[in-house]
Amino acid sequence: MAKKEKLNVKGNEITVVSIDKQDYISLTDIAKYKTNDTSAVIANWMRNRNTIEFLGIWETLYNPNFKPLEFEGFRKQAGLNAFTLSPQKWVNATSAKGFTVKAGRYGGTYAHKDIAFKFASWISVEFELYIIKEFQRLKKEESKRLNLEWNLQMDKPLQNVPLIPE
Image 1 (cartoon, rainbow, N blue to C red):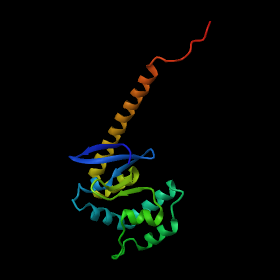
Image 2 (spheres, one colour):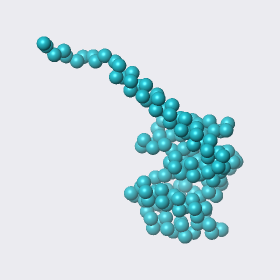
Image 3 (tube, rainbow, N blue to C red):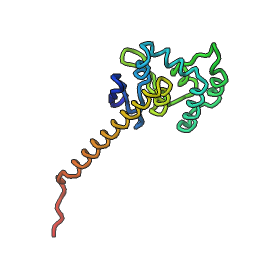
Image 4 (cartoon, rainbow, N blue to C red):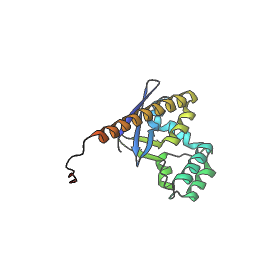
């Protein structure tokens, strides 16, 4: 994963990473707002029919490699008592790009910001609003920093440029 940034939302540290110039937010960190059993929280969210429909529409809009037939299979099962779904199973079956899952000590489940905000709203509407506000603050700071770096680069004198004789 590329560059990592941290959001502080109501005393919870939420990791944001940039993957292919897109922001992905840790669902694992968001789920910790609710409980330490983060996998169960994420899996319960993914069992919901509205969640499956949202993910399918998102992937259809942004992912030309998305497999709609596999999505339809999940959509038909969503909400049934025996239905279970993990982000990894979703990615493997549908070629989804809205999630990235990394196992291990420093791993976790990350989702594109659109999906992460939807998950946060399921956790708590209040928490969702705080995450959005903090994310906007982070992007504003990042924009200022990049603009400053650009301005500093433009102010440097040109070196090793041959002078044009008069």
